Image (cartoon, rainbow, N blue to C red):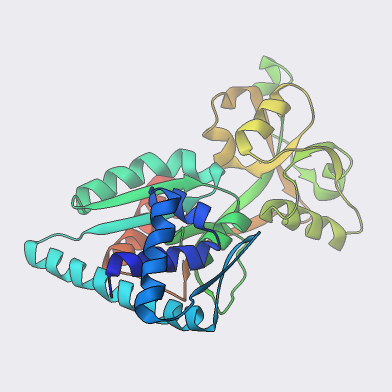
Length: 303
């Protein structure tokens, strides 16, 4: 059995599409289809059911997918063990970060990764927690930093830090900039026009849940996905936002915003490290998890 053909099949089965798999593997789709077909011919089994929506594993395909993941994992572990004999770890790690943290973690994390594992490669992408959770399941990500992640049989999560959510408004004047920010109750926040991510964004769902607990609901001015875009709209006077302090301080123009603590209750969002329980972490991935914790501790004081 050709390992490359097995890798191609696993990626198609996980992504559910020859097109998406070809993009992820950076090969032409006809070549990918041909290699998977050769694997089917060798095994005398139909491994994928092709339809208008993509490709779904057959019963034989599901069985090979389970074995294939294990085989490819063992191959990766063997490469890593050989790398350790040379004195270094190797392999590729794909990491997903939420936008509010990516701005402050990407550079120091990449710098630490290159220093500690020069023979390995790291890929960092930004995304929403819901999308990154799905990418963990289909193998596009090895590690994700998620907001308010829920435990499941498919994803292992470990606490990383907690962030307090604050009301972000346009700074009214230079004089006000010198004053200490005054707290505002969550009920008062519910009366303000909010520029907020669309559902099922984790922070959006947390805000709505906490407001429902005190008998109110948010006043939505605009639904915008993306921290930078939300802050641009707040700066333009479109409304207020509820974000972490880190999201504001790492923005391009932090001085134009006023940040106020929210009380009754205080809003805190949990940030977790997530990995797939379907694919055991390689040694390089385990080392990357340690580096992420160390980077968070250095950059953000450990939360």
